[in-house]
Length: 163
Image 1: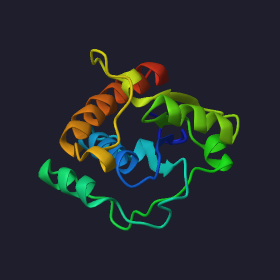
Image 2: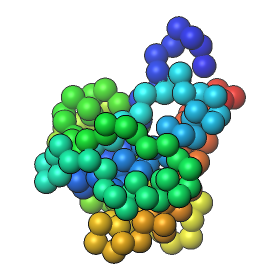
Image 3: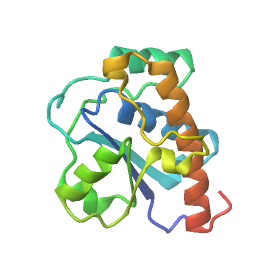
């Protein structure tokens, strides 16, 4: 990508912004750093509700990221998605179909809005389940990891860059 070109902005969205979306943010941040692309991206996460606003990342998310040697995003606190986010980000990535519906209710997005698993080559999985209720953080990590790799490949094709 050209040095003069603006950064590609990616926003991951879940319900409370303490489990899935911060996990996706950390994984995708690690992925683009590993690929030498960190300077080409701005990556963030948000929730569709204010239930957890101001809270830190869930301990289960922290544990699975540490277990997989993915750096934690220091100082990350839950926040709710805003209409300004939908005008700012190039890719707005929900964890479930419900999140996509909520995103579209907030405001008309300027960027591409899709579910994370639409980018993955997985049989039958459409939504990333909420580990807050199930405790399935390892399973959710695997789904999000597959989605993040697929998302980066999609961005490479769409931006027509050999990144």
